[in-house]
Length: 330
Image 1 (cartoon, helix red, strand yellow):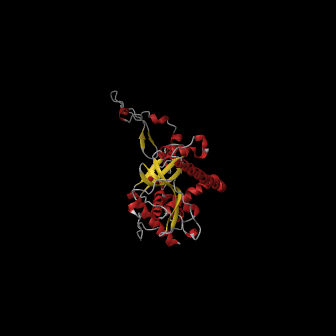
Image 2 (cartoon, rainbow, N blue to C red):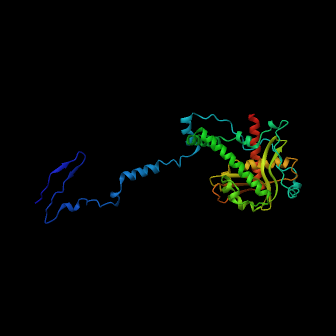
Image 3 (cartoon, one colour):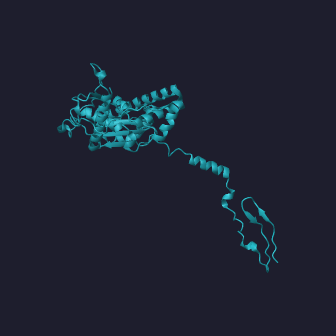
């Protein structure tokens, strides 16, 4: 005998309840789907798991780009009015080296390092510095990141706190350069740590291995001027690094900068100083190589970025472009 139970209508589909089809001890329930197996994920805290997924999926790591952040900042602070950016090539070429015959000898190595003061008298105030020119010709992306960093620092520290922070960085930089000068003029030997202020001890420890590779220091904190191109600057140091004469720039950082690209406009600055030195009659030698030394506050080994002659020429052309753009804006 066939016996059926009632049929239940759920509103969407008709689902027969397990009917007993008793035919010689045969049951139709054997052909219905078996109950689902127990899932190991059934014990997961779904609320916490959902929060975790939302946290990961809402991460802004992939969206931290100039384009997306500009849209966000323009919504908050208003649109940015942009200036025309300079072309990639200079309109007029100016030689980087002036006298190749003085390139290898590097001039007279005897005597203490030269330190020519920056003379702002007799019209010197109208001569722009390398730092000023670079600041006035930043790219839109550089301006964006700089302004954004400044706004965030002010939000964190306040106007007064940010001013104090900036002054502390400036004071720290001066102390560091003074300590490096002391080490270079005393044969590259650093004093005992306790003789330096806590603000610079870590930085000096960071560059200690770099100082061991330096010799024949020719100039320290010395002014350079390009008469024809009309700009000035102060070169941190001119010395031999592993036997090669270089214009050296000392930088401090709290974050690692293992690649040259991490140093932003510093290579352009070094090329500009070297080009001015090569045209300055106060220096009887030519320099075609550069070096950027990034010292770290925590004392970890400094990164020394070499700028060989070919690379210096590339950055020299970039500098000429920035200089032309600056003069056009004036």
